[in-house]
Length: 139
Image (cartoon, rainbow, N blue to C red; front, side, top):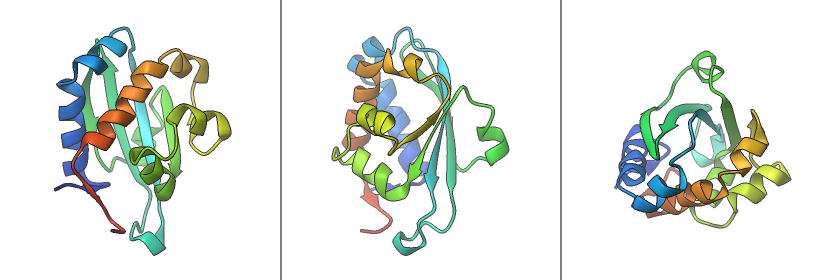
């Protein structure tokens, strides 16, 4: 069972996205690359920020990279960053991702209205993240 956050977890998440008809339909016109930053939390066992980057087009995730440099991550159209515990709450369905973006729990850089146009795709991403059989570093 992959542990969040890890390369194995990201690989399984990409597999879930790319086999989901619902995601393919919801994201069919979405083209962007997104950097996700899981901010360090020493007490929870995450000693440093983890930067990941994924590229989306045609209703699929074309590629994803785990633990990239902040410099590489800065090249994305969008960056979504939050503390590890917020990401855990999003994955477990306790925080709605769109509300989290609007409330500032998830800090977004890039054109937020573009992301908001794809609410259904974002909701599918969260549903799929919860579908990944996983544990968390602080479990």
